[in-house]
Image (tube, rainbow, N blue to C red; front, side, top):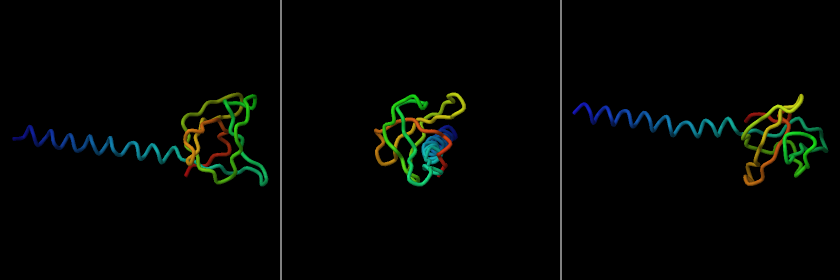
Length: 100
């Protein structure tokens, strides 16, 4: 009798942990573009550095998801995708991102 009850309790705890992690991880990944000068846009590039092609400009308030970050020279670059166009991925400077 104790065996099934313990297994059920353990399964419930494990499911709560597994189900809670993706939601928490997704919340920490969401950022918005901020601090870009008026009339300018944050440049999303093809790689982590200014030597890569600019793919698109992102105005302040654009919501992105951060996938990974790396340090190149004195700048931290993050690979992001747009919240509204998730298939578009590129690199932006970390300095212009604010966690939501």
